[in-house]
Image 1 (cartoon, rainbow, N blue to C red):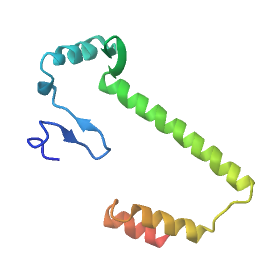
Image 2: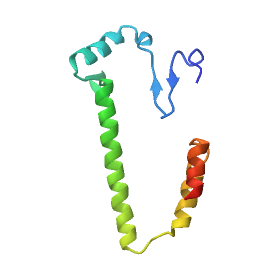
Image 3: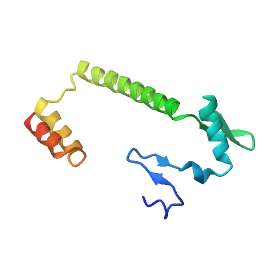
Image 4: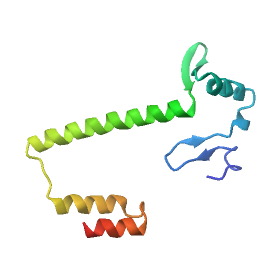
Length: 116
């Protein structure tokens, strides 16, 4: 995304929007306090919480915790499916993996997947 065409916002590869702190104006003081104090700030609209600001380390920890929870749930569903006999052959799974990652990984990794 072009930063000038979007008012300074930048989309990252993981679907998030990066906002330069300079674009926040007076709000940048709130962000700086969050970082300095290691304490989140809850943003309200007419007294109703609508967002929260946390430091980057806390945000990353929350993302990793969510990913771990999602993985555990996926694994539990997979084990339940396997117990029910809902299984796929190895070649079928590898074809699905290759297709899913085609164009998303380097040619070297794609070749490695093709060998499996």
